[in-house]
Amino acid sequence: MARDTQPNWTDDETKPTPLEKLFQRAWRYRIFWVLALIVAILDQFTKTWVTLTLPLGSYHPPHRIDVLEGFFHIVHVSNTGAAWGILQGWSFFLALFSLLCLVLIYIFRGALHLSRTPCQWAFGLLVGGVIGNLVDRILRGHVIDFLDFHLGSYAWPAFNIADAGIFCGVGIYLYYSFFLEQRYPPHNSPRRKKTEENSLNP
Image 1 (cartoon, helix red, strand yellow):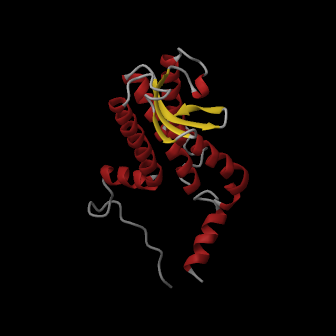
Image 2: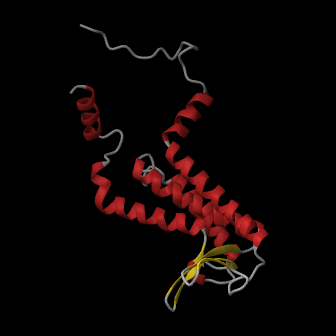
């Protein structure tokens, strides 16, 4: 009978170093980190381009850029509030709230199922968006909005890449919570172990 062997952690060659442990933990959330980084960098890159291209307050023609005239325009407006222009003038408190959200996501990452792939997609987009707007509030005192859509006489409030990331992240997490949660059991659950064993022993 084959004897079940355990790693010899007294051996310096096999015992993982603290750096290796940190890398293993980070690799577990690799989708989250990559998405958050992409959203935050893309958000700041586009905002910098808008700042260098259009003066602040460029909303009406001929100052804006008409991508699809009457439907999609590039503008340059500031927002000291939250989404849809609410809480105007509360930029400092919104920055503190954003920091609190990031801390809470880290603390409750287990309860939020952050190790599961759909949740990494959701929170990667969300956290990247929160960081992108947080950088604006800290460096500029306001958030830059530049994506402007119109449908007939209705004008959707201008937004940015960070806002889109937050919106999509929340949407994905809600969809996961209502429709997909049972398909992704916890890593240490008996159901997960049985699924992995079946995949190894077809």
